[in-house]
Amino acid sequence: MRFNNVSIESIAYERAPLRVSSASIEDRLHPAMSRMRLPPHPIELLTGIQERGFWEPGTPVHEVATRAGRRAMTLAGVERQEIGLLVSTSVSKDFLEPSMACLAHGALGLSPSCRNFDIANACLGFMNGVEVAGQMIEAGLVDYALIVDGENSGDIVENTLRRLLAPDATSQDFWDNFATLTLGSAAVAMVLGRADRSRTSHRVNGSVGLADTDNNRLCIGTSERMVTDSTKLLKAGVALARRTWVRAAEELPGWNAAQIDQYICHQVGKAHLTALCDALSIPFARCFPTYMTFGNVGPAAVPLTLALAEEAGRVRPGDHVALMGIGSGLNVSMMSVTW
Image (tube, rainbow, N blue to C red; front, top):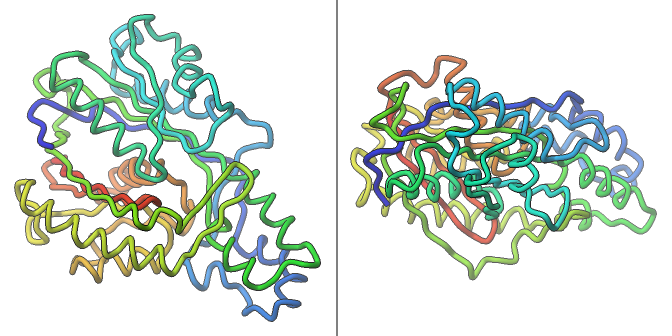
């Protein structure tokens, strides 16, 4: 998929205020971990995650997504009536229905003619949202699109801790639920617009994606629990990423290590990011890691990391930026952006 007239007008994010360290989670689990004879401090040791954020208990997910969306519109200088499409990509839900997009649309006071819907695809939802919105902008159906995402992992982590502290919990239960302990919370929003009217130089050039749904049971999640075969998921995800990289090199201009200045990747932890870099023969130094203080924030990770990388001066005007994500299912998306 190629784009000629799609720009990123702004990105805004909200940090979850309650900071929870990996050490504090391990302290709570100490009785169970001692009984299971597990190594000390496995979360930070194996993932590099030092802390993550949670929202105050009872915080509606659409509320934090709306805050990010409102800030993104302000940064873009776009009025409410100019937004022709709102897409919510949150894995976290306040309700099964109405859609999260409906809730954010109403809270933002967007026009009745503004189309709104959810796109859900595990950790790739936001990138898929960019693709769908980009196609509608390219087709001339809308001038501006707003993509929002809010993730709240506090409840599922708390439920997991209670289960692991039960007297009948086993070491296998710990490792099956280990990925859940890496989750964090955040909200992010992006305004996309027509490049021929853009106030920025940020262009979405195109994207590619591949699926490997033979591996659609490696991570199974509900609002209450998430069970993950982390080792198999890592191996299968990296293998699919390698195949997707080859396709991206065939379809996207300048998609090679020599011409990509910065890699913005979905962040699960250090081992996953290192394995991805090794498999694709890309330098870790050109990735911008955020997992240390945010953990895994699902589909919010890629746009959040892009915003943080720009703030840190790691993404500069004119840079060729590769956005890359792996979602349980399995799916991989890679997107070319000229900043």
